[in-house]
View (cartoon, rainbow, N blue to C red):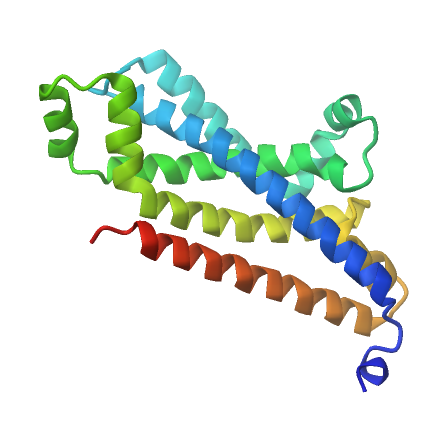
Length: 222
């Protein structure tokens, strides 16, 4: 029955493409979380009347975040081709997509981290300061702990966006379901391949959202 609905689908290739999409999404989400979190915390702490208040640092990091999150992803991939070739040695395949995925998503997540931290009750931070808490303690025990539900919500949204980015990266041969849908489906006019790739991408998105919702509920103290 399923073979009749999707006559052109090579299931081995489809499974391989799904694994590549999962790989690109997982690796880029991890590094996006780490880098974006660091940038967001630094943006917050270097802001006015904060622990590491520094206008120059704040302006520079803010400018970098704003510039990179404003560049359309497909253009960013093209701009990063020389850097990707130098770093990875090729511009094709799942690994070659990672630099653009991380650089494109980390600034976006950094801005979400900043928003989450700005929503923390200032009284909680002041109370920690008055009790002599060190900066490291304030960061990990107050800032990150209090904003964890928002941080998890932000990385869930970002991970879902990264799934879409991997599909766009497929247009230049990055691998994954995007490559399969474009080259095997669209260019050869085999709509069943494109539809199946789309269905699998939707399933991945639903799974990410489900995991995100579970984690958010677990860490939400309200």
